[in-house]
Length: 143
Image 1 (cartoon, rainbow, N blue to C red):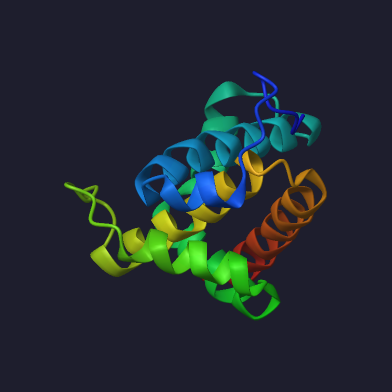
Image 2: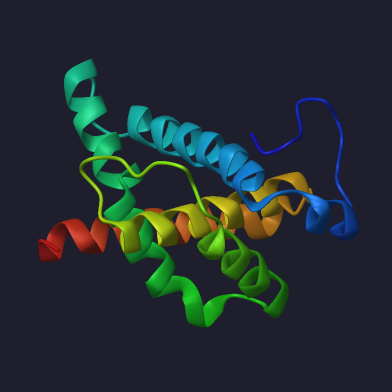
């Protein structure tokens, strides 16, 4: 699932030259696809229920929570890409997200984009699996 569609794996230098919002743009897509794939393997079959469940995982507040929980496990390089994503200045903030959560969600998506574009499938898989686990715990605790 994590192989690059065009076969291109970017070097660290190329990734450092990319705008953080471009990394987040890719990371958003990768994370959304991962969550959708995860949900269709679960017991949920109704499309409306699948949508509601996916929103729970992909909304800004959830991504910010996941990133805060993962922070201690991130490598120095990953932390640098997170910092770049968090400090990026998007032109808009969704009406149902606060600015702080949105910045951390952008940072999380930049991390996912970085891992995907660098071809680090093993680490990407670990982070995504851990994200689902954190999301489940968040759901159970009602946060």
